[in-house]
Image (cartoon, rainbow, N blue to C red):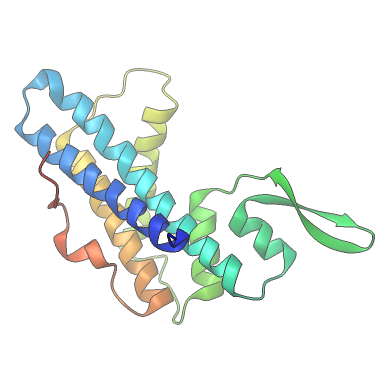
Length: 183
């Protein structure tokens, strides 16, 4: 029998490794393939960030005593008043990634998180770039340096959250942009 938490974590890590590998391929590619590799790199990096944060959220939802509103936020579900009690429903209620990160850090961190540190503003810059690509209104050219910086900001964000919540570094932080994949 598989462990869903370990499967979630392994998936989140694999997404980051794939992202970094696509960045490596972009650096080695001609101009025709470079842009596709950069698109894949930044989108997979954000998928990884969300997968890591959602895995943390699910762990807290499963193993801690939380209010219905806290559970609703972590699981992205509506909370409604039913017969005088708040209940978490199955209805989806999306939460901004940045809001979920702030909530996790505020509610579960063992030490205070400095949201004025450079990693937080760099994540905002990376999110803006991702949003321009995900919701395009015009052509969005990507540069290797911008995508590298975005991935680095995601790694720095995960490192800050892991350090605050688990009192240990994010395991992939030491590798920075070096992928362990060879495809």
